[in-house]
Amino acid sequence: MASELRTEKGSSNGLTDKAPWTDEQGIVMKVYQAVMLTLEIVTLYIKMVLTWFHAMYLLVVPPEPKSVNGEIILITGTGHGMGRETAMRFAKLGGVIVCVDINQKTNQETVDLIKEQKGKAYRFECDVTDSEAVKALAEKIRREVGDVTMLVNNAGIMPCKPLLQHGEGEIRAAFNVNVMAHLWLIQAFLPSMMERNHGHIVAMSSMAGVLGLRNLVPYCATKFAVRGLMEALHEELREDTRDFSGIKFTVICPYIVDTGLCKNPKIKFPSMMKILTPEEASDCIVDAVRRNYYEISIPTSLLYVNTFCRLLPRSVSSHLKDFLDSGLEAQ
View 1: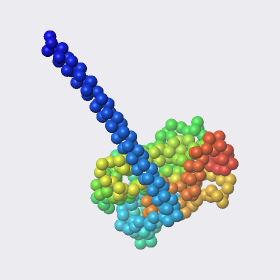
View 2 (view 1 turned 180 degrees about the horizontal axis):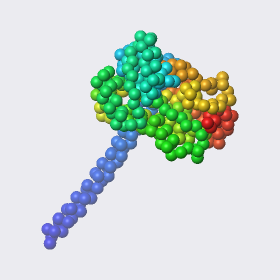
View 3 (view 1 turned 180 degrees about the vertical axis):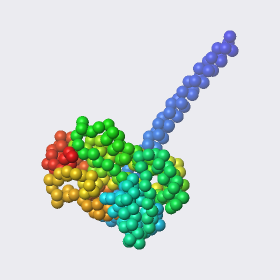
View 4 (view 1 turned 90 degrees about the vertical axis):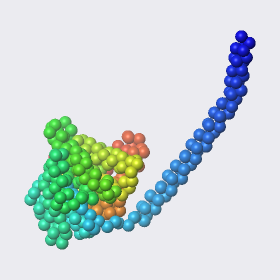
């Protein structure tokens, strides 16, 4: 009995003796965690400030354009408009152009134009909304041309009318061409880029993917989706444990380009927000890709204006939109 009491007493004393030490450990751990968190915050702040100044520097002194000589550049929608003009410009810079379009006649015309200027181009027809057709296309291109190192998802359609006037088929077609085709093509050609840690994916979004516009509800939805797709894919590769820093991404957000898609444009201030020609837009696209810009608008000022407007109350930004009074009338 006495032994048991001594044991209990000893245990009690042991617990009493350990309690202060346990409290001290807890305090030390909390101090350590606070110090480490402070260091992490300071490090983050320094990184953010340095990155900010670097970004400001690049606004004044743009990065040198990279060479695309010898790059195998696949561009969709090369039968006309920006696709054709972009293909011709990359060809002049020494790129090997893989022209993909559903229209054989106009696609061949683009290839002929490239060859007339001593460029190198190949023609392939494909319905890029068909995932199986895209897989077959990718295999054929690998055999006949080589591994694609630059993918320009340019093909798109733009139905323009109030949402309630759209049929189901029309909406599905817009998403298939403007969004799903991007996914199928990226799935087909990204793996070879990852193997080499070398490549560039370019996505044609729109200013309609930055702000909502009337008469373009399904189109806006598809172009917002493209921006989300590219941002998520960029983060997926950036956070991967493997090094994919050699794979670049560029999102293009043109305003109104005279490609035939914009039937009834409405511009209140043409000098500030003019309708661009495909040639002008393509010059901006090629320059952005060569400088590895992640995202640009055409004109370049529009993204900055939109960012500023997002900081304002919605009613205030609506007043600004009403003042600019620009967009597309229903077809």
